[in-house]
Length: 462
Image 1 (tube, rainbow, N blue to C red):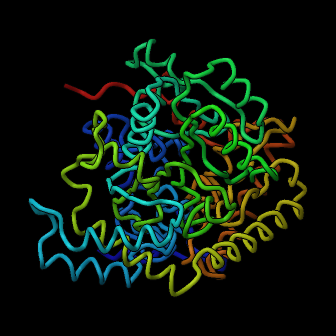
Image 2 (tube, one colour):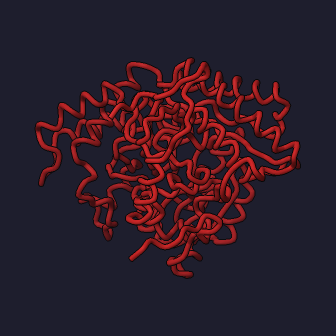
Image 3 (tube, rainbow, N blue to C red):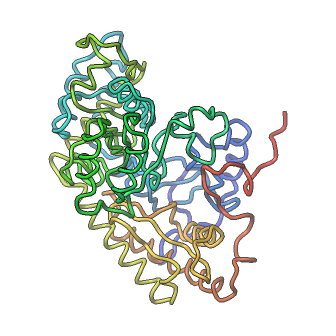
């Protein structure tokens, strides 16, 4: 099959046909709950009948089953920082395959990968590898509970996601199946709000095992003294400080937010960009905590990340190749430059068309998101759906404008062209006060909502 763009215009690829993608997506819904293996990848996150099913990618471009080509953003849920099929990573993985990938004893590769990782995270003494971020954050919580003898976990309520496990999922609207007693063990505090954390630690004095937060997010940087204040409060109350570096790691800096902001957590959890899309995650931290899951402790042992595939050779080889790219070049600087230019282009188009108060590219340049509000200035899922549809028609795929180091100026220009076309329609909707008649089907909906509606699908035939 020829997957090259089948039709082009001066502005880039023009997407008009998704018939095969629709058939494949319908079949996926019959075989896979939700039609995808990650809720954020679900078809309910895209306009009705406009969810491409992808077949390959290279750099910042992907192709769908219908032969359409897209500039892609948010690659692999922010896991691909170097671009799809980045040659040094692919070549390293290809070379490792001939030697086997999973064994009954540790490999020399595990030692080399651990040394590479800890060289990036100087505040950590030990590391344990896994396959997904949720396992590492849950392992961090278990270690904190084992170390402190406490049960409660304080999480930053302003940040969207930490784990698929009960200790966190119990706090989101989509929490069916999580026991009420488990939900009561997680409490929240505000980002850049030290008094709210102090209040939680005082109210639950001597009961909080861990304080878990991302050091920064796309839209919020730590205010001066905030992270240091969190560190101090954890020390005062004997709580373990855990940084979730899934997104900040390899996107804010190779060494994550802790390297950039100069505050060292007790434990930190990694994934996404460390493998450039290959499945690899890590838990790192202070020796006295990590050894609670090892053989150098006389205390009761914590069950710590014992996985069949955590240290298989492919993921570790991909990580080592990524680490080498970060040592020898500066992908973070490239992403910052590309993101800054993209924000200028998008916001310039929005200003030109008089909709800058409703649509904007915002956030850290390496991790941009976009706003979509209605005529009253209120964030709107219906208007988000309209904007996403316009981007898709212009050959741009993404729920954000999160760049990789592979995005080119030509691709950014194509994105600006797609944004222009999308915003012409968006302005019409603003003038009409509604998206009615401009986009088919119900609007996109939050991924972690409590019920399938408004994107509930009929049950598959038995």
